[in-house]
Amino acid sequence: MDQIYNGLVSTDEAELFEEIARKWEPLPKEIKRVYFRYGEDSDGYPAVWINLVVPEDLNPSKKKIDALYQATQVFSNDVVEADTGRWPYIKIVTE
Amino acid sequence: MSLPLDLLEQAVHLASREPKRPKQASLRRAVSSAYYALFHLMIHDAAAIAAPGLPAGLRALVARAMAHQDMKIVCRGFFNGNAAYLKSIAPGAKKPFRTSEIPPTTLSLLKLPLEPELVLVTRAFVQLQEARHDADYNMTATLTRSEVLFVTKLAHDAFAAWARTKSTPNATVFKSALLLQKNWGR
Image (cartoon, rainbow over all chains, first blue to last red; front, side, top):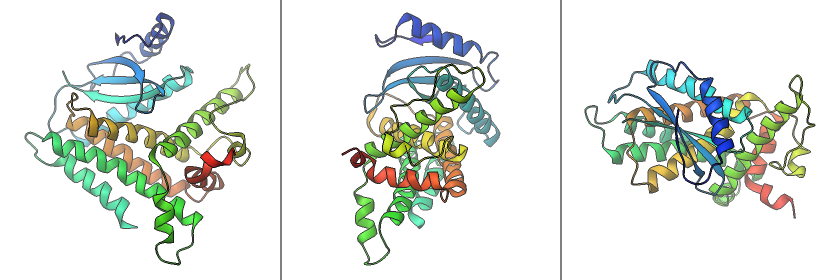
């Protein structure tokens, strides 16, 4: 799992997120990989962005969006249950 | 109450335009419309319990008094407070329930745990508001259609969940809190 450090996350915290993300493996086939970005959201609340890297698809099917949606619910819940103090935001990105 | 639904429909329309190469303008406006759809749904229903329909225009003025950031704080507080409660009653839980995310005055009116539908709405509101902020102001990011369709699905689900939960006592407290919570601690 890749992490983007920006000075706002401790090593312990990064390890906690690594541990959370290990539970997600193997990833659903719609997701190539996942990486985290840490920071504060637009009103200064501690946040983590769970970036889901997906293959470029100009016309994703409903089935694919539904599968991504289901995965994001699991990912968000795991971050909340781990009591990280960060709000989990989902980003869906391509490379 | 057609504005929220019209905005949601507009979001889906914009997200699906230009099938071969979506324009960033369309995708960004789709995200913005998805957020504003839920925002207007919330302020419509919150204003409806705070002000009568007559005289005409009063309810709209009440709705206008609602602020994005205050609403986000309420949503995040309800979500996090509920999560803390669920953790405190889980088998093997060692810590008693306490939360600083929901003010005591609001907490005294709620029956925890919150309905899952209300939890979904609060989470969607926070996620959508941040996505809207990013879509409108972060020009370094390139939006993908997948992400925008995900965002519109989130808004759709929040609408459906709200329809199922908006008449519950907890949702009534939530609607009042969206408008007034920041003043309840005075």
